[in-house]
Amino acid sequence: QHTHTHTMEEAAAAVGDDHVAAAPPALDVEHEALAVTWGVRRHTLEQHTGKVWSVAFSPDGNLLATGGGDGNVFVWDAESGALLHKMCQHTSAVWMLAFDPSGTVLGTASWDNTARLWDPLTGTRLHVLSHHANDVNTLAFATVVLPAGDDASATASDAARTVVATGSDDRLVSLCDTATGDVLFTMEGHTAAVRVVAFDHKSNASILASGSVDRVAMLWDPVTGTCLAELRGHSGWISTVAFSPREVGHGGGPGGEEDSDDERQLVLTASGDSTVGVWLARTGLLLHSLVGHGDTVYDACFCGAVMAGSGGDGCSRAGVGGSTDASRRDHRLVATASGDHTVRVWDADAGLPLKCLRGHTDTIYHVSFSPSARFVVSGSKDHTARAWDPETGELLATFVGHRDVIYNAAISHDGTVATGCEDHTARL
Image (cartoon, rainbow, N blue to C red; front, side):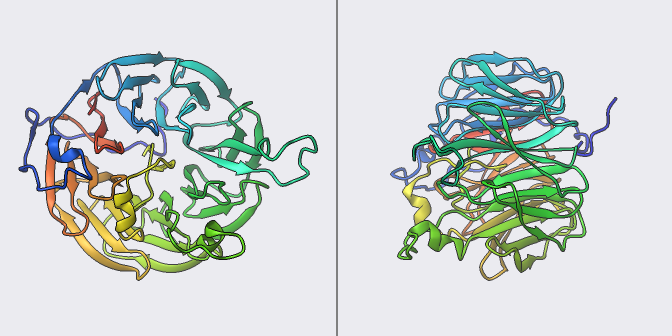
């Protein structure tokens, strides 16, 4: 059997029936529909015949996509749990999937050396991206604007393209046009498997980050394909890269609000060396090394960096609209998940620890903020997912019922949590 560099540990024994171990917290129903239905399991999605590695909500929250070790991709109605489409054309495990910002394209990354683009509303395959020579581990979507003159016949609206970045065990990062499936750039520089890619959160992306088993993260210009910076300093593999969200109220420069953001935009790198790097995205300067975990940091995310998918997030984490409640939180908070059984919350600007969230009894592979920023969800090898208040550190609920490792979770804008598990199921 082919051994992948990214294969996780095997799971422990099964646990008991579905229940929620904590009483419903006193949340404000005006801002969070979750307050009414906290911890209620709506649906168990049981069509997969292999481990469910990735789950992702569409930007409008109406659809849930799941990808598994069986090579299948399913699209579900997020409200009813009804199976809408079966896409069964991959010939090996689907490690990650994500929706594009418009919700009209679903991308899947597979160990069959391909990424595929689908219409999630019909289940129709749009393109097969077969240019990689080894497992495709990660993908992320963004909109980029071509420089004037690249196409003399193009109008201003034509210059904007939705693109998908992919990273592979072949050490390459590629950028493709989602409309045509054509490869725009192939970016070389990593010396080992590329595990993660992520775009910045600007409406027109200007930076693509990649992280590799070679212990280096790289920043790329998605318009030209050139390397902007190499983020060196970790002594372990890079498990996650993530950008800080767009800031509110910092405009005023000649280029507008987003140009002002460039001065303060941060990028995270989580690593097998048990640390997280906080870097200035504009220059690649290391600002802080977040030290405190006692084992591999498997996931990291910013508060306010609202997410549609991960494969653990982009979030592999692609942008989706969130609630206004997020703007009243500190968008520079960071949450991290580790093999030391803890979630930690940090002040990214100061590089200081704020909270250590204890309760899991085994490795934690996933962490994400809700789009409203009111809670954090973690998924663990202990077969549970947990919800936490990131400000107080309070454990809000423990979701029990899965019978194996939970590697991935997604949170819709209404507070619905989806989990993907090695027990061949996803749950809502």
